[in-house]
Amino acid sequence: MFRTALLLTASALLALPLALWAQAESAGKTTESADRLIQKYALLAGSEDNAKSLVTGLRDGTEVKLSSGTTSTSFTSPTGKMGFGNVNIALSLAEASLKQQGITSPTPQQLQSSLTGILDQRASGKGWGQIANSMGFKLGEVVRSEKAEQRAENARAERPERPLRPEKPERPEKPERPVR
Image: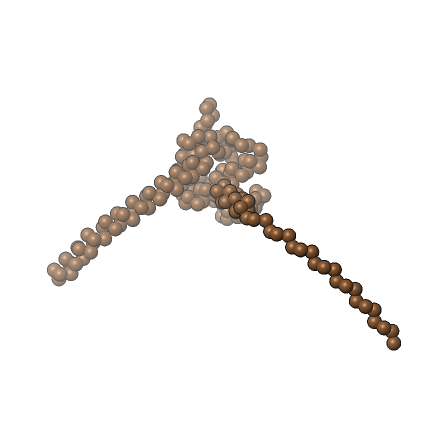
């Protein structure tokens, strides 16, 4: 009995540091993902503070507060909590929608309007692909990162040109068959 209790206690003490390390690793990746999204959408949001509010508000399902000089607005996502991938897709679609309308630096109200329209569709049960198609986009093209596009361009530019194939010689005409 004593031996079993001692064994259980020892294994719990050995597992504790491993669990704490895994939790710390997970927290580090979470802040890394959030920081990456904040940097990516700071220009769209108008400031790093607005981008931080967008990313954390959408991620946690809390209120998003956007401000710009004299105007400000706030809203809560109808979808509730979202993962970082979903936050990225929603913001990418909002950015593409605004660019389609000719808006490159949106006001907080324009950004809210575009984003809530997308999030309302998502909350109603539509998939990201359906939402993108209803807006006239292909999801892969919208979400694809600029880095991936640059890598593809560089790969095309670095590829040597194909040598021209020599022309095939003309076939000689067949002689006519003699008539019988």
